[in-house]
Image 1 (cartoon, rainbow, N blue to C red):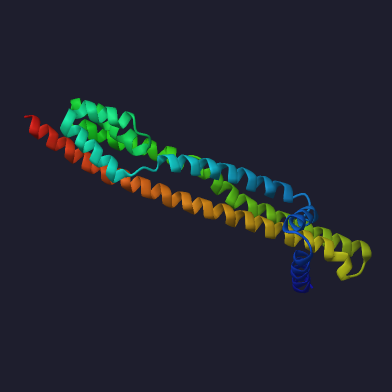
Image 2: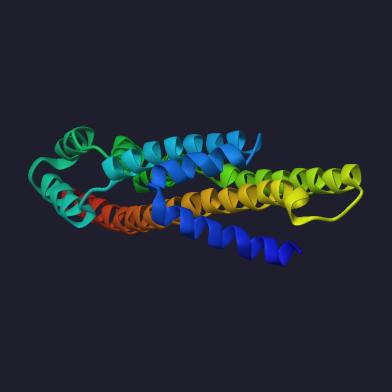
Length: 230
């Protein structure tokens, strides 16, 4: 009976999509889904808010690392450490911040500069990942809310059967519809947020790899600069 009701609901959705606009259809199904549609929608809205914030942050953090590294090396050759620090201070992004932290410790030795770069690199990485835990939370929470709505809908269906003392599609249709709609919307929300989450993770991985590779080249450039000054 559940399988036939599922196909019936799908066919009804397709038929209604042809007759009504997508917004009207979504509003109708949202209202039909019952109470648990509200926290599912809240999960989508809050998750998208964190996604927009991360997208903005990672976009600002993304710079042409190779070009910036060449500019830093040129600044080291022409004006020494002070000019390179000035360039890093006037450049946005985690790579420039890490370089600046290392250049501030050059006077204490190359080893001190390297330790500063490693320590500040870990801090910058935590800044890049900030907010991802909340997106991950709503990815997990949305389908769980949907499944909870499913349980509620099935309880309503069985309560209706108990009260009517008979099994009829018209009696259980409402409860089953609630069960299917909450699960559907919960899974859709989780899939939308999962796409954003995976995209952000890939962007962060790329930034971290660029930061690590360029940091090694900066240390090499500082070693060369120290040798030339002797």
